[in-house]
Length: 74
Image 1 (cartoon, rainbow, N blue to C red):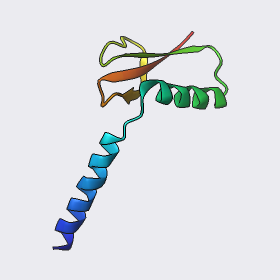
Image 2 (cartoon, one colour):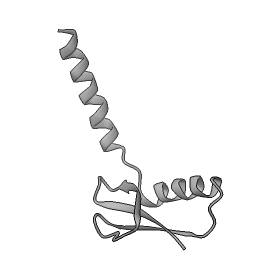
Image 3 (cartoon, rainbow, N blue to C red):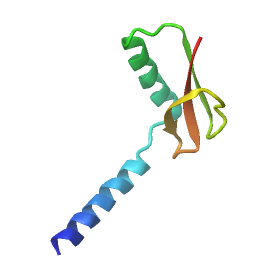
């Protein structure tokens, strides 16, 4: 019974986390701040459709996983 109650609680938490996804521009700004704090200066961040990033590194997802934020050093 305890396992069932814990499982239901975890599903509720997971569902609310998915519903509270951040807008792409807000997440992009947070990622940009973290990259700058690590000392990087010559890079680009772009919001693209999922899978359209090519050889760029995916550093975040937004809009319920339909968009990706990609990073490329210059």
